[in-house]
Image 1 (spheres, one colour):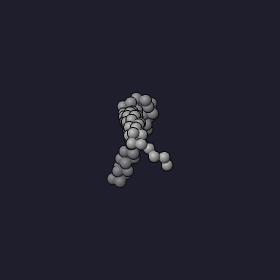
Image 2: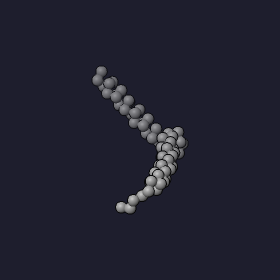
Image 3: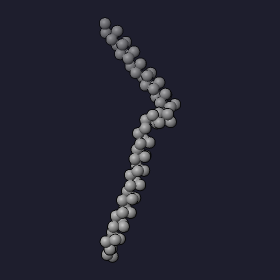
Image 4: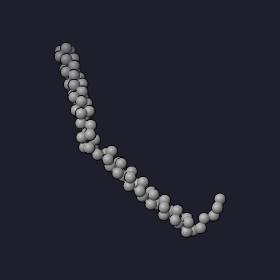
Length: 74
């Protein structure tokens, strides 16, 4: 393995630091974009509305079925 001078090692460390800074900033940007739930809802508004309707139907049906069971037991 060839020996590197102290200046080459420092230069390499500085280049790695700069590259790490760029990568970290890119990661922060991506995380911020992915965790922005308002933007996600705006992008997928139709799917959210369909999901909410289905959930409401299922929950409403479950409550109605539970109420029916309680009425039958009396």
